[in-house]
Image (cartoon, rainbow, N blue to C red; front, side, top):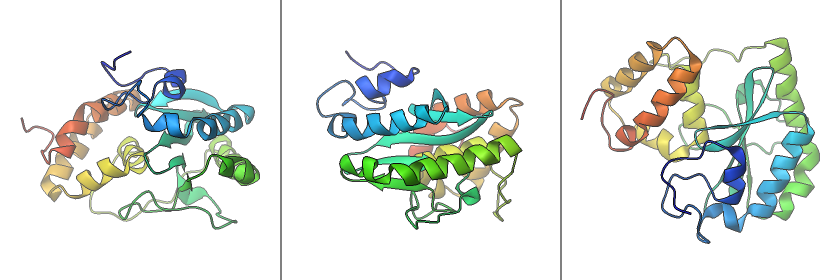
Length: 211
C-alpha cells in the first residue's frame, strides 16, 4: 500500500501510519515501533467516551464539540497531546512542551510502550479535566501575542513540533499572511483544510500567497 495523501480514517493510522512521508505503510513507519502503546492510548480515549476523528493526519479525540487529545508517533517516542493545555491542572508534573515555542506544557511523552499502562490513571484524570471544561464551555485564557492566531492554527502547531518550528522561523509578515488568510474563512473545517494545504509552504519558508 502506497500513500497518495494523508489519512482520513483514524483506523488507518494504527494500521499504516499518518501518510505524510514515504515510510507510510512500511516496517520503518514510526507507528510500527510503538503500536502496542498507541493502541493502549486509543483504548483509553475510547473507553472515556471520546469521539474519534482525524485532524492533521492524526487520530484526534473530541468531546462536546471540542478537540481533547491527539495521538502521534515519532522515531524516538510517541505522544498524547492535550488540546487547550492551559486549562489543565498538571497535578502529577508530567506534562512537557511540544517544542521551545509552545506556550504551555501539553503532552505526555512515552519512550516505552509499557509506560502507558503505568500512566493510565493520570491520562484518564487529565482527559476527564478537559472533558469537563468542554462540557462547561470553559475557554482557555487569551495569551498575549503579537498576532491573533486562529485556534485551528495554534492547535496544528501544538500537534506538530516541526511545523511549529518552521512557522516561528517565518518573518512576522509571512506569519500574518497565514493568519489573515485563515481568518477569512468562516468555518473551522475550512480553516483546518487550509492549514493542511499550507504545510509545505510553511516548511519552505514562504508566505501564504507566495509560489
